Length: 349
Image (cartoon, rainbow, N blue to C red; front, side):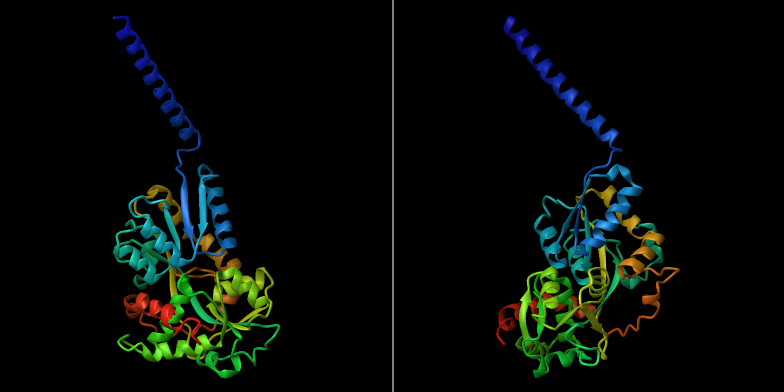
């Protein structure tokens, strides 16, 4: 009998302890505004990401100290979210190409929603089922070191990059891990094969570019450092990051809008299925706040996918020449094309 009473007492003590712990956790959650941790995988420039998160937590103080940002390449985000499908770690995928986000949607990695800003967005900039939304438009242009080259000396079009005079003068951000570079290279192939059925002319062009490429940079920071040190004078990169580095970090970078046109990427975001859905939705809605969009256009050189009332001077004067790229063809063939480049072309020149 005494043994039974002892066991009953021990059990009651355990239940009381668990109840106390549960009550304490609930109290902690309530005192912090009930916000769960929000994990964001982003391909955005760190300055942009830090600024946006600072503004977000300023408006929603319950998320103060609860937002974790991991900076990755756009393709790396897709691969990571794909690998974590059974146990999602992120809530927001912020910064991805249209084809990358579409792949995530088709693999059931993304949560569907219809936020308020979606009705203002051109259908071509969003998923019809609300699984991803375009945030900004990224023209891909020719970057050059403007301390070593004048605007007159810089290449005027894509084909100029493969001219013999630029042998070993080109630096390319390693392609396979970069959504930006994958899109540029796939565009170069698709422009020479409209339906994508014959990529060989594009492969031949990329072989010539590889022959002129002195080195492949491991990441954007490595690219900027090598370019600023004149370890190479030319590259292909997105306009926003070039302007950010030139204006905010005082890097010696200029750009050329290619005469035949710039591939214009739809770069967007999504809520990861199985993540903190409430937090993800709140962050996504905040990201399309009119004032924030205007601030990001003015200070961080973003071209918003949703029209803004007041455009900064640089955007009003931008002479954007979009290349005619069939992104459906690119999405269908990109993986095969980039794998071929990685195995058969890279460093073979």
